[in-house]
Length: 230
Image (cartoon, rainbow, N blue to C red; front, top):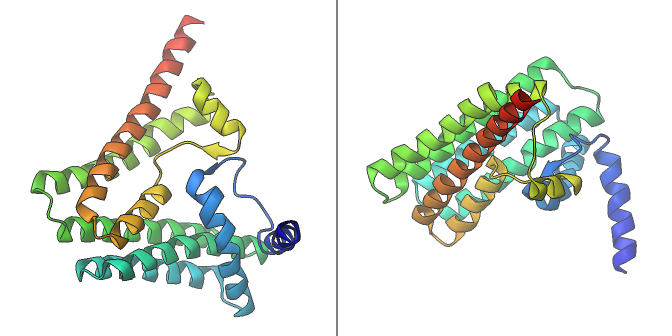
């Protein structure tokens, strides 16, 4: 029974996900989101929606999740945030499926992601009862991470092969990117919101994200030191 269902799902998945995004994927995407978002891709395809419309729908879901959090409808906010995540995967699937990948679509996707990111974290900071310094540290952590990764880590990684630790190589060999990424953060926010523990998840995000960017910078610095010795 399980084997038959697995075969049917694989056929379904391959029909609506015609191209892998990358060789490795984040844990939450690999074992949750990308298993579910093909169903949303199918719905969008059957309704003849364009990828850009799906991107906008994903953005609306994300913004509404933030509004729901502000209004302290935490369960609704959690559901809407996950809907955003799944639609965010479906728009890319649909673009590749219908061969409608465009520069504008890619820019729209990035813009929507940033709008949702700001809305969600602003709403959490507004509604939580944590001290002001914690709220400010949350924003600093999220946006400093974006800055340091996109303007320092990624540019260097494109030019040089980073020296990875054995544990990280193991995960990458399994097709998993070990990181405290935004998808994991959204998942944690949704889970903790279901239990009304917004204050706690903020501390987890701050700790996890700071460890994440510090480790990635350390990989770059370790690689630089290694290359100088050669």
